[in-house]
Image 1: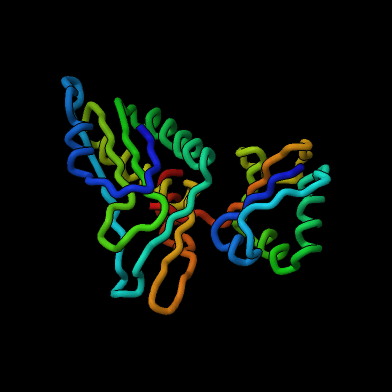
Image 2: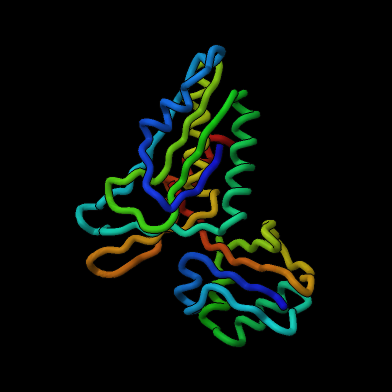
Length: 146
Length: 81
């Protein structure tokens, strides 16, 4: 399941729901990304998406991960709109027969969501607003999967 | 009529997020030229490295023909998660 939402979410029940009814799944891995306050520099994080296109691009990333890691299932929930520090921005869960595939797929999906999924992030702070550009680290992270 | 969408910092530079062009330009290169004539700073930002273009929600790398009702989106470097 892939979903964009402008509402806050609680990762706990999402993970419980994802784990339910899995007699043949040996491993579930999950990742939750939270908005950082950056020492007071970020009061609100604003996430913009391109409706339709963003879901389609994430769907393509998810299909590649499903095949590459032989996943049984996956879940991606991504916030859009205004997000306060400490709130979850993204939740990813992967289900596989064994743990290595579940861990790696989660890692892979997050690297692709960071710099290949159509989102644009703006930090609103005490000195105004600024668009967040991908960091060199994000490009290095994604290069690991080439 | 061509629908043009700007995302991220591009919409701040232009001062708009969405506009329609009538008559519709025939090619992406023609659309770029029109936008640059209106706003040189925007034209420069659209041509910057890392800015991708989606034509009817499909990424295109080079110049492309536009249909009379194309949707063209300019996408600066993406930053999710």
